[in-house]
Image (cartoon, rainbow, N blue to C red):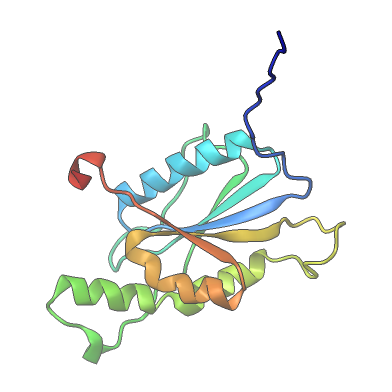
Length: 165
């Protein structure tokens, strides 16, 4: 009787360090969910680095990581506060939130430029290459920024499973 061998096609470890950029919605529940998925991803590959770009709502305190158990390969960048035009302020919370995220596009772009190595073609660079973006469902309008960098983008849904039923 001939014996069959079977192996699961697990992805190979990355040879060169790679950077994922996460952009969660500026609500603590979304930030916590983002950190949890980031921790799971960096635990799978020691060549993966994640930067979480944190938007600050008006009157909120900047985000500070006080949890020493979070991997050193997960970094947090507080984006500058986006200035909303007085004429842009509307009573509808959904409209406010869309404008709030849109007004962070330049801050996200600038933060990613600072993360990039001088030459993405150089193998000897100390900075990891940009592998892609992971956007929260409510910050998905920032996908235009990922397109500017010719990077792949993913959307992370932070809703509890019960709401999907």
